[in-house]
Image (tube, rainbow, N blue to C red; front, side, top):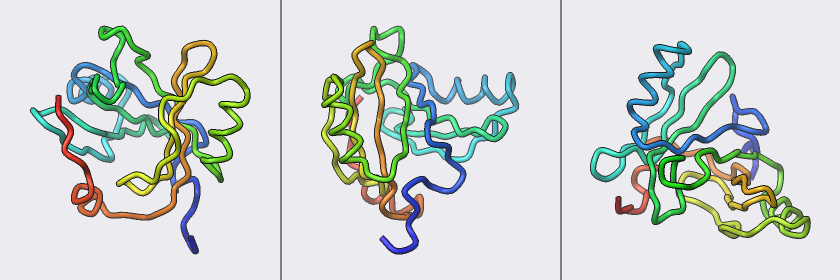
Length: 152
């Protein structure tokens, strides 16, 4: 892992990840309302966004459309509309610590196609957290090549 930073350049330890019905429209709203600058967009099936990022001031905000089959639902879908994305030095250890402290496992740690070791939990109060360690620097083209096909 020489040269790979566990928290990628430009990110904070905790980053909000909003799940919405209409991520592209949300980006436009944030641009107009908060002077957000779009930094990344990964299209998905049917015109949906698998992942996008904007920067509001010095803070990154991740967004995605709803994908109920992946446990990603917005407030209208009855789910947790916000995922707090936590970058740590060791995702496996942080996941284990969260489970030991009473979190509900959603997704055990796995190395993902975008270059993060990634897990998800629900805290005892119903909030969703993703826990990640950045393990590989990839270009957007490499990420798209690795991305699985996701249904609506």
